[in-house]
Amino acid sequence: MIKIGLISDTHGLLRPKVHTVFQGVDVILHAGDVCGDDILHELRAIAPVHAVAGNCDPIDDPNLPLTFEHTFEGARLHMSHGNELGRPKPEQLLAAYPGADVIVYGHTHHQLIFKSADVMVVNPGSAGERRFNMPPTVAVMTIAEGRVAVELVALE
Image 1 (cartoon, rainbow, N blue to C red):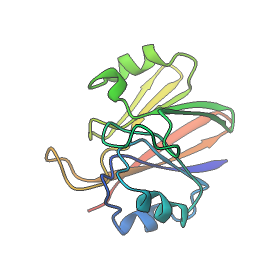
Image 2 (image 1 turned 45 degrees about the horizontal axis):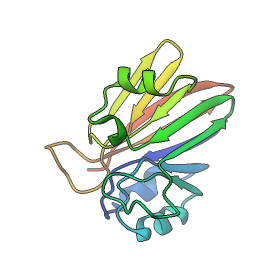
Image 3 (image 1 turned 120 degrees about the vertical axis):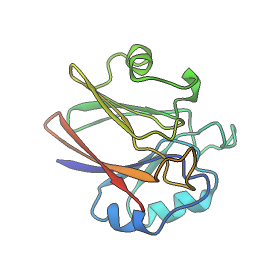
């Protein structure tokens, strides 16, 4: 079993509660709009981090590729910011990334857990400053023998 912290759209702010919520995770995935290396350094103090570039991140940052793909405990995961699809809906993400068992994205700031057949689509929401009247959130995902479970956690 692996426990994964999911975070997105920090926009340069890492709330202290993230340390508590992500305590004990094996890895952290940041789905873009990091907006500062300090965020990645602080997250790495909790667990190893994989991050992708968002539309507010420098396009030439070698620490922020456009996509991240990896298989965790038998589940194929794809992560990108989502801006490559405009304001993506789960159906667009499912069509764009066939073969993934889990799709993680950000960009919209709207937290979402969407299950379609055997694919889980997750947006952990925005963890940074409150925007669009949405509460700041992150998610914790567990994967065991290909089975995926996700819980959204409010940061306020």
